[in-house]
Length: 185
Image (cartoon, rainbow, N blue to C red):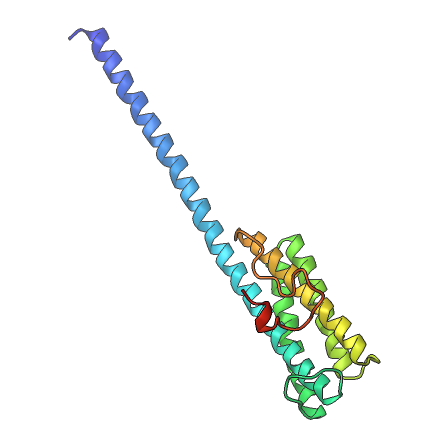
């Protein structure tokens, strides 16, 4: 083998080694980025889940107190003292969960969380008689709450990269009640 042939072979081996090192570095960087995104998606999911759970607790408390006041029917009524206490306790938890969503979520999710929280506050204020309301106002506010909840859930799905819009209650109807069994497929 000549010296020139040996240099070509050595050069090819060096270039091949350099290409392998660069390819490995790019692959490692992509894997670290993907792992980082997965960790943050998991953290955001937990924040969203906690926020949704606390929202449902507060709405449940507001609905029970609203039943006591004759604004709605369905959930078991509670005393005014119990209803106010449950709403107040959940409101403290909600403040923390909301701030976490605002910190970790994107702009769309943050706006949707704010609108949903405002709708829940309205229901709570009606139930506690901090705002005047009758059954008609309650029904309208509850429909607003459900639409805001669905918007928040759709924003979360988009933020987390989950395909589709998910189940949307009352989609295509003006009803705020669950569908009757005759409407189910």
